[in-house]
Image (cartoon, rainbow over all chains, first blue to last red; front, side, top):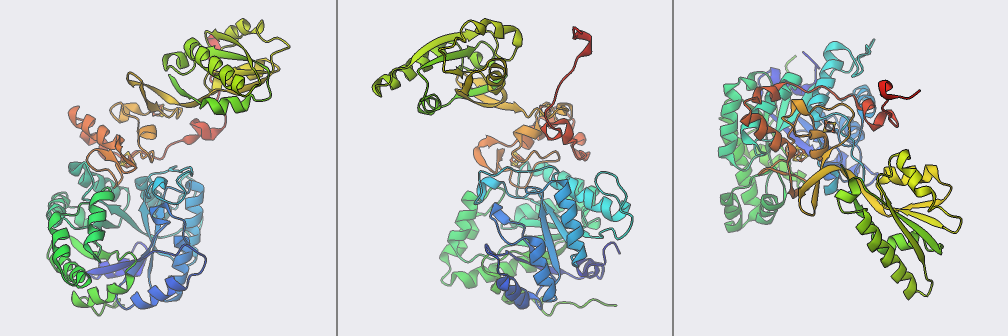
Length: 308
Length: 223
Ligand code: SF4
Ligand code: SF4
């Protein structure tokens, strides 16, 4: 066992893992985080806490994780390299581990030009692959980035990274995933899948390189509330592919929300059949309360227990 | 070269609003090449400032001079005779380096007329692009001659990030993704396997993060 996190244990048991996502609020009251945590805890195995997503200032992912832990739900703390240098990052990692966080997801972070502080300076002292490596070195080599030894109580995280099968250059995407896994990623969450064909082609390459055996691959999903949301993502979110069929399907549906749920459930069932997919990560942005319905309809409820 | 761009004339006028007589100094180096602060631009700026002030009924006297380089003390001598007592301010049309050299040398109020942008080159007539982030330890040999530090919006050394699509960067569909360029080039050169190596964390102390830098070449020093 590398970290002993619940997430790691469930993967080791061979469970099809389900994670959700909570976006912290843009103010200093955490009630909404707690509320979502209570609602989700029976339905997902762990939950991502986003790190100032789309570069908009929110409660920090680590502070949010404290609230989630208090509700007895397993947090996955997202950590971007956009806002902190190696001193800040390592300090926050020590702090996160000290409060009981055991899973960290390493990301580049959306460029600050997307957020509410577009005139800020970005840091990028490390990149996301270097962050993965730093976490691994802290855990397995007991070393800080500078090489100094961590004499005792090294943080032992289950290390996550993201992969985007829909970004370009497509042929390089799996090579880069391999790089992340070689750097030390234990689990991978993918960008939201709408183009299932492309995802399957990507998974084929993943299997060819045997990467699914080296890290747990969680397929990212986003339930759609409306065709407008789908259209928006197709047009404006770079690194995302939304096929026209999906937009049409949503457009033609009478009850758009029900159709969105239906589509997501179908996707989960399909993904379960793909060799090498070890779980799903459901990102229901501003629609967190739909996750229980989706999990139930997909036949993934109740969630497994850790076998001692 | 250093690429710079003129500040709006009204902004420059504001910087010298209390002056009656100014010296407008051009530079014959980079800013001449990028058409921002050479002899021609000195003439244009000086006459525009005079016109503006005439309209305001507060006439301005200007003296114009362009020296070979403002970033070199050797050429600063050429300026000496123009820095007379009646000059209230010096408007430097050099990059930020030249402005500082003038300010260091003369006991005058020196203001910049340009915004210094980046180290780059001409892409086509009238268009310049950034190429180097002056990081102090060049790694272009690893990336097929394309700089990820300044041309990737996130300075990613093991790119591309998830936002790269259709060859463009997530920040703007007009901006090329540096890592797409690097990938294409490495592929053409048959060196894709090099991109599988994890590029280690960079030593930014060699960049500006180590404090102001100096280059010393002892063999050419006079003392
Ligand atoms: S690697 Fe450094 S020195 Fe080389 S081009 Fe890029 S910023 Fe400039
Ligand atoms: S899209 Fe390309 S250039 Fe833009 S931040 Fe990502 S890797 Fe860098």
